[in-house]
Length: 52
Image 1 (spheres, rainbow, N blue to C red):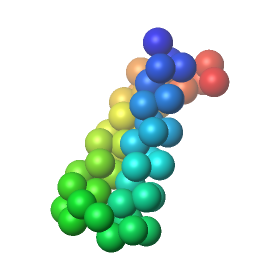
Image 2 (image 1 turned 180 degrees about the horizontal axis):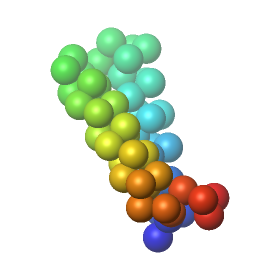
Image 3 (image 1 turned 30 degrees about the vertical axis):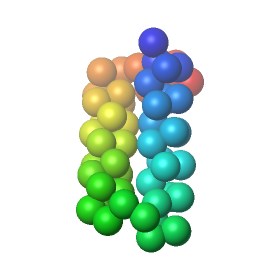
Image 4 (image 1 turned 180 degrees about the vertical axis):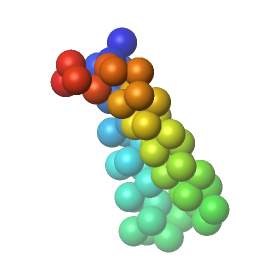
């Protein structure tokens, strides 16, 4: 499950970077970034981050 979470995080970061660099999506790009940050924090706080 932790691998799937990290895959989702990586995909969201890539989508955010593409949207940021190509100026597509407006405010949606920043929402994606917030979701990524929340997923990373939850992953770290639940202790799943130690099993990379």
